[in-house]
Length: 152
Image (cartoon, rainbow, N blue to C red; front, side):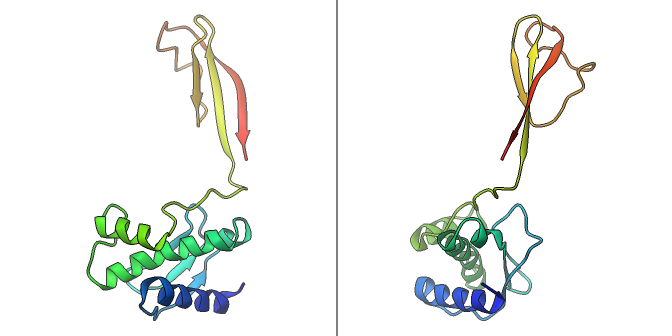
């Protein structure tokens, strides 16, 4: 799918789900990594992460588009367009858009498992810690790196 096909899909979803037209640009943005899409308040353009289509399919892409269109239509109608606003939550539920974008499959997360050498207390951390600086919170024993787990 290219940007022209995405533009037509966004316009179609806007008319079918919201009953209003989408009059600005919708494009794929490969620089988006941690989010499914982005609505620009100044230009009213929508950027979509292309991995929502390539890794998660058309249904996920449509859910992300509906999410961004909720921001768009509410902002132009001077209603609550932020995630925390009641108007946004109600409209998103009505059109069945995605609240959160799914994680990308190539985003890796580390988990470091530390164990106390004295009492056996387990600590799971996302970041490495300095074993010379930190001790067990229960018995003040020394910590030891048990294993490093990498999730995909």
